[in-house]
Image (cartoon, rainbow, N blue to C red; front, top):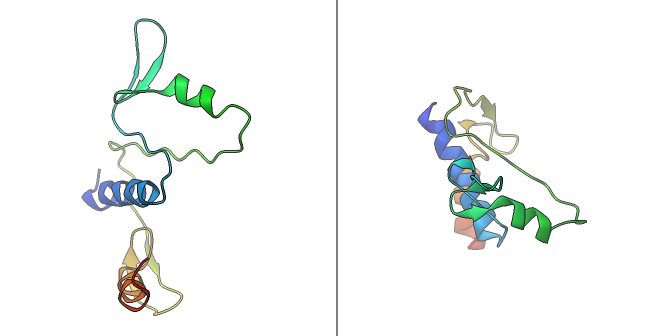
Length: 99
């Protein structure tokens, strides 16, 4: 896996954590009792807690070989790889004090 893709997945998780969203990371394992866990978190319990809610579930594997495409920022015109343009993000943080 490219280190850029791995870093981008971790950046996405960090952004979700900053927004107080549920973030789980670690190996997906089926326990002997049939329950699924991600790291030390019981996935089945989490799903039961959110039953009936409208959710967005984002999953990224840390071992695939997909490459991130280079994009052109619609604001500044620079090419970048990742979730958002790092130049514009840095300017937003500088000018507004947050992302």
